[in-house]
Length: 172
Image (cartoon, rainbow, N blue to C red):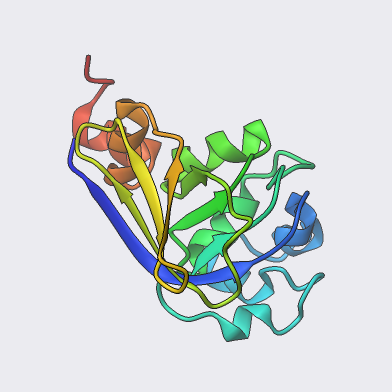
């Protein structure tokens, strides 16, 4: 396991962002291609959001991110947009697992002090014991929930399928 470092601009949403807000279910009937889906990201909440994304942006949300239906395409659309992590105090269980399985880092932390546009640095130590979120605007460092080593390995491989292609099985 190696350490993980992500840095980007905070794109902030509130509590209970459901999967239909992330990508409306009617869009998955049109295509499952991440590059097509990215243009519809959060279109129900902010029609111009997808066009405003910059490489490395990070999603920051309130409680219960990814609630609603278990559609995996809600993770696919986020990844297709180039977003590699979502920070929130809590996630819907299915969204959290879909995120890890597809290579999207779910960071459980206090997001109350993060504002739209803040520069955020997410760091996971090589031992997997510590994850921190640094806000360069405010100078604050937030302790995030550490991820189990196997989850970090899956994320670093690019998702569960990529992990199995590389390792053939779970390493113990």
